[in-house]
Length: 469
Image (tube, rainbow, N blue to C red; front, side, top):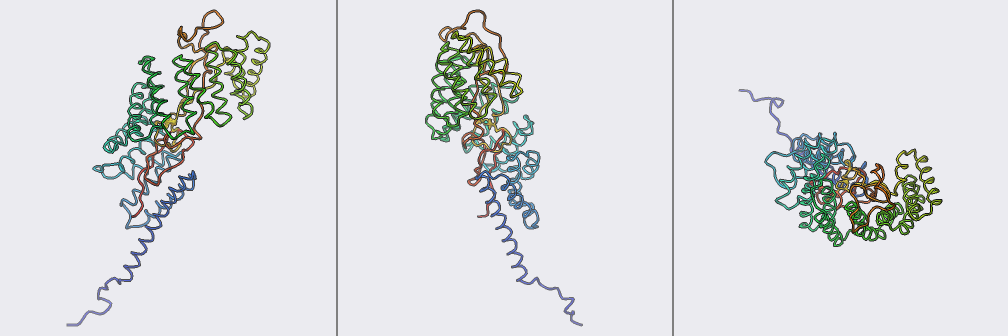
């Protein structure tokens, strides 16, 4: 019997080849890990384009390695890239990757909650609010055992508000505030309560005392927070809430607290204009004149011609009530010219009453939101993403004709019937979209996913990332 030839003898794989392949896999995994870390670092620095590039490279490396296909590594890379796409304003692409990253149905805990949350944010950004709500509910079920449900409840509130259900929104936001308080996040809790108060007002089912209590609780929480840099914005929003309740002395008090805390000229001008509006409502036209003049000067100094025109209109009304009709006429003409300069047709409606600007909802709101996948809002209710939403708080000559001013707050001035409501004029909130903090967003993150807030409305919440141990 002849022995097999050497060519027919099966060759055992050489140990050195196996070692080379193993080293290659290890190098690939190390590269994925480094790229993932670089992506999160870029997000923290606000370099969103660079972050997406890093996550793309990591995902391609994981996709091209047979050993890594259909593994948690590839799912994690898909998750990071999908969340980054949502954050940078491409929710459709992000959603496809996030759905691909879903773990098995039995998975539990924060990691799975983060994935559900980001899927919800993608649907939210795409405008599919019912589906977004469903995924927020799934995320909530995973977060509640850890007591980490504030962000999900806040975003659910934003969804309900966008659907036109303010009562449900108020309930979710109040629950979010309680969760944030238990988690030691007083700033986020304050923002959530402020947003809840606005939803309560919109629903019309709550008495003045109940809404005032919520506003006061929001104020108290804000004052215990270390986030002093944005306290001015919150005070301004609280003042708007008091003004809508026609509690103008309280509105003035809070606006005065906001003024020294707002550092940018445009923000200061907004608060000054609101102070002038509140004094117009109280009949304190001399003080209103001073605030409106300062607001007009500040708006002009930063090129905010439209806002300056509204301040001129408010100033003109105060001057007319003081009997200085020549100066009032001149300021109405300035307001009209500002409207022409900005091709705006709404300013002539402001000539009746010195209302100031529009009210931009907070970041819940994400509300911000948020606000896009404006990318990232963390922890809040909120913006911003709740941030693109706008509504008028009132109009008419220095008053808020939604109801007649209560007796203790002063009645209509100047005789006659209250003017009919005019659209396009009203108090305004400071735009905080460019300066939100972690507390004003709803990002869900691992220790390395802490991004700066994007410039849009619906915040993605990138969650757990894969980093080999």
